[in-house]
Amino acid sequence: MAAVLTNDRFRLEISIADYEFQDGVSDPFDANWLVVRVTLTMIHGAWRWQVEDAAALTWELQECIRWLLDVSAGRATGATSFSFSEPDIRLEVLRDADNAVAGLAVHLMDEFQPPVKVLYPRENNIATLRFSASAESLQTFARALQAEGERFPPRAERPPLTPV
Image 1: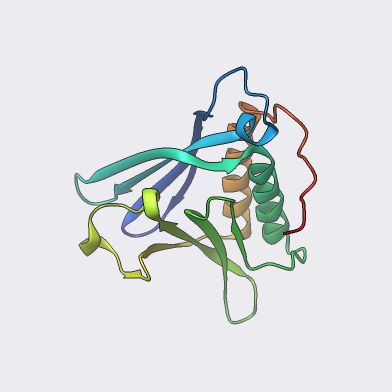
Image 2: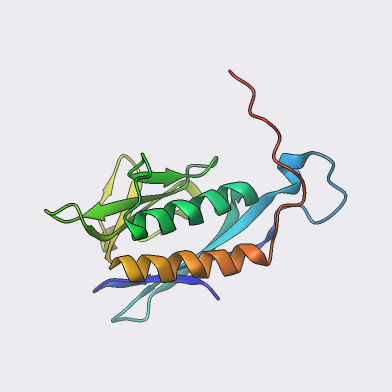
């Protein structure tokens, strides 16, 4: 089941379509790339757009879910946003004047940008969609992503990061 956010104009669905490489991959990074599916539908209209591309590692999806759950529970995360290795999708927590969770901004770039430029504003070639969401709604979104990720578990341990 896809993770879903809605606002007054759009329904956004994020799901995992598959591993990028099916079998026989010895590199732990290649073995763990996930193909992410983004579907954007207009609430009032007949416009629908969908794209799939390799965008996240299995480990990053797990980190994103933890980040979303921490944010929704009011735990300090040290970060106001979450990006994957392929920065084509970035999630950013929105807060109200009292610093309570008010929603989520989803920034889409490159392969994940919807083709219709007149539907929403873009800045620096990034399409940003904002969704009002309570902490409970963010937990539901995170749990849906978690269910997606459980279908595609890590196929190797994450190698240690090497300093650049």
